[in-house]
Image (cartoon, rainbow, N blue to C red; front, top):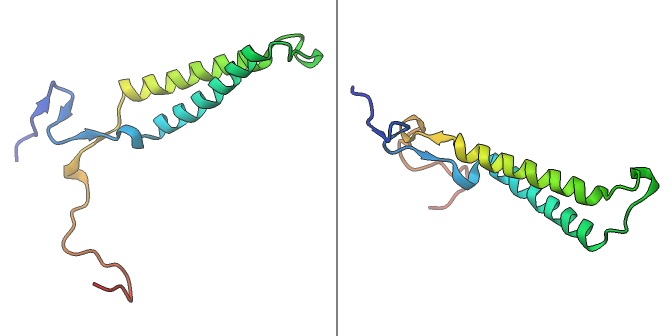
Amino acid sequence: MSEPTTRGGTQPVGAHSAGAFDVRNVIAALIGFYGLVLVVYGIVDPDQKSEGTGDVNANLWSGIVMVLVAAGFALWSRLRPIVVDPTELPAEDGPADDGPGARH
């Protein structure tokens, strides 16, 4: 059997990336959302400094770090996508068994 041809030398033909179902995209979205909330809160209420943080706007700085981490996750999933090869997926041999008592 011959090797599958590649598109641009990176992925076999028929292969596709996990896309939105990649867990790194979900993590990036969640961390990015919470980071943006903290950045906005840190900008809107800059007087929220306390002695416990050494008079530093902790919400603003932690929000900026979270946005940068989220950007790192998004960049990572773009540069190194998870490739799903359809030839390695289990083949369906017939109608799926829906379990006992299932109506057809």
